[in-house]
Length: 457
Image (cartoon, rainbow, N blue to C red):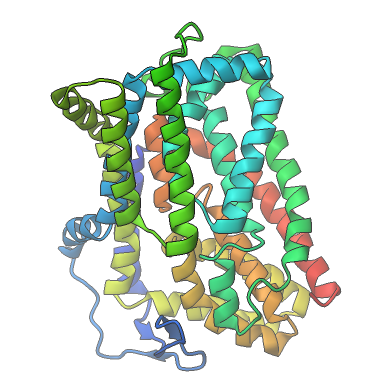
């Protein structure tokens, strides 16, 4: 009997577009009315759902048409990835990364447990407080180099990053793009309930740390145990700790830190997004090239080489966007949301809270944007929670866990696919690594929600 093989990620995403098209023929079209909130965002109005009798499902031709449209809508993050890839290529060519990683290895004594702990903690805090996600792209190469030098693999490296940031989003204390948006839609005081969320971060962090550390330890003991041992694209060159640290390379590393600091400042104080972030990386690439005494032509060639390496990743991101577009074209997205929410009225408060978690987790496949999911689902979940005895704070908690934790596994998450693309990890191999942890997160999440309901959170 032939062994089942997970299809290529692009094949998987195209198949999901086809499934979404079939759904537009099987699921009745429907719509919820929308209104504009105080922040100028459109939110759905609960209790206004109605079926659309005259709506027609899109033709089969839309399966093809939706792909270039989706690529166009995903151009922001796609071109941002190209710019980041180009900048990283110039940074690698300067030798500063190898020299810096050699210094870090000497300072940590090649202790993987310390690297995993500090790395995961940093990513968790960054996502929990200021909602960092895309900003981690430029750190991927650094983290991969450190892990490979410690006889770990790129899966362990990306595990540190993605598991860390998914915990940060799932148990976020202050994340302005998810928690504060959802609380604003639900009519709650901004940042309220942060103490409980910070406390619940601990068990999730312990679970995540143990998953990454256990896998890393297994790979260090036996390199063939790596999930990507047979994947050439996931075998970065071994960094050398013999690359000397020169004055020029110190300046470049300082420029790197300054750029990351600039990104954090811009996001936090001026709400920078892809245009401003991309501009910062273009300037960074030019500065690094000039400081490293590269010619203008060399800078251009390195930049194009780095950007071209992420072409496949940009395509995956565009295809992923096509799933939501197809459901929207068929006007069935609101029907799906409304149908999933209705049964909650038949459950008790605790089970309703748990059901909210699973509904939000499922919807994250179709609406991977955290803030977008908040605007679509919270106006429905909040009032339903009022009826079944689930506080709006608990409804927000279920939303953020469903959105945040699933960011680490759903193939429609552009940030996840971008990071996996940079690392050369096939989605099927990543799924084998992350799926057991997601089941544990969901189980603990159910317990956390039950406790939250019991204490009147």
